[in-house]
Length: 451
Image 1: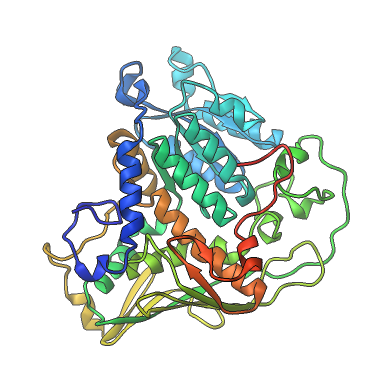
Image 2: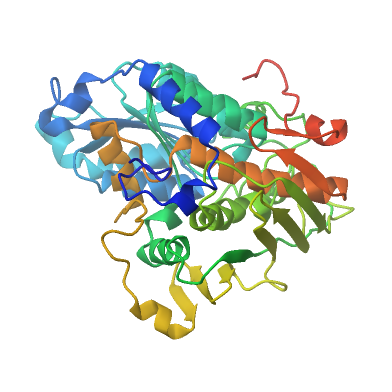
């Protein structure tokens, strides 16, 4: 039996009762009927050592880290990079060519191509995998185009900026038979996986509440309009978002790779509810057995700055209710401890990337037996993705589950913005009798961009 985590595992009736069977069957049928484009470099027909060729879109703060991580994997070769900031672009090109200097000297590697337009990179027929590490507002469009072009995709979290974008991306990935892994690397953490398995196997009794704690971002002063730097294609950086005058704190630092200002601007990012929420709410739903579904009611409050360009939420609290009665309470870290706490009728489990705690502590001494439910195990998130590219098996953080986790975060944002209790249909992916909330499931895009 194949579980919603993508692995063959013992069936658990309590687990699957929480999963949207209707959508699972629909997704499975879509994948079964989709064409599989197994490119020759992946199969090793035209490349040494079953090499996977990669193009990287976005090579800034997070992008460079992911680029270096990829270059450290066996059987991978980065052949192209792309960024709208020419300084970052040339820095990435130099880093790639330094890594492959010996291959360049021996004639095995012709050098790293550099592009300012992602469409040129995606159009290359010799690229198997596209890695996308851009601001959140630039996730969906290049990922959808990469899938249509027959590329497999590693996409940083949160998967998309809107729920509509997520639905289109997931459907496109399935339609074209592609592999997409989202950077929800907490699923590749052994402590977190064990904690979720303990919850799913009833170690804490009947689960009734999950508490997620997230950090928040502060507001900032009004920022002066500045000249657009010559090295930045600002119009391309804005992409589908509304036109706004340039100031450095709206985009990213022109020197160094410090944390960028766009993470605090709601035109490009919804704040920590999707920033860290894409990690922690994902784990909450993984441990709840709801990775292919979502809540049915959402109610939230949030504090939003009234001045300045940094306008994402500050202090907040959101309560989600699921069809089985389980409540997920996601709030800032002054309310909930930073991490994920599962509370049941007979105990609790707390997990974060660096720890696992249990009450009573003796729960940690009870191993998960072979005949119990086991989630996918991944020792390295990128390697898990690369293995999936070769095997064509679902990775540990696949597109539909990532869409559902991201949707939960966005639903919380919409609840904060409307300030009222919302009723959600996780199958139809629509709010019940709320036109205003439904209008927030998508966003208008500045021409010529669309999905």
